Length: 248
Image (cartoon, rainbow, N blue to C red; front, side, top):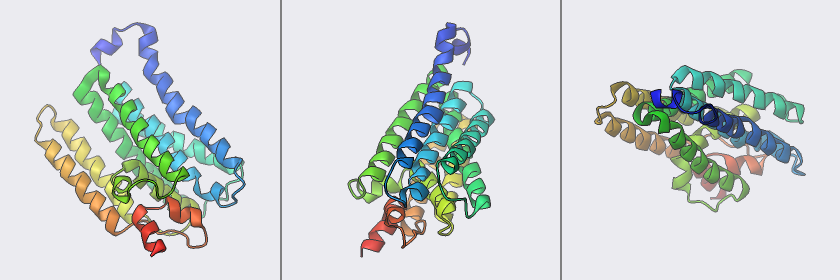
């Protein structure tokens, strides 16, 4: 972080420009595209991955760039709230469960910011580059899953924290129940990640974090978020194993 502070001003501003791009510009464009869809179910379902990715891009990259966990949490939550307000102005139905959305947003913000804080801790001024790579990778997979349901293997989606956040936000937007496994997975992996960051440079906590990630992924696989049977798009964007159960 010290090297980042002594870098040229244009270089210091670069990570924050990426935060704006990944957390605001790209999600806003995504919501505008969703609003132009002719599918009436899309406006109540498709915003969930857009909001999740906006929060992830803002929280993770901001925490890594600033080297401050709570900066990432605050900005991620603000991004999520702003995107929901924008979606509502574009015609998204009112939130049936505002408290559920608030809880999902807080837990997701903490989880995303925890990873950004770990990147800052372990890679210093290069941590935000790692955050950008992680966000880009998960975003590519989540967008592919949203646009081309069934094209990606189920196990790949189940291990993505971005998918966990998307499923939790989707249940709050549609009022289809509680994404308990996804919320527990986000909270549990956040705790494990913060443990690694706190104990850095000791490496053994990475085993704890990796084991927690696999364990919570298995939990999400077996107890996926509920899908609304009246909305096929909801089933397609819920936890993959739930979509598989519906097809059976």
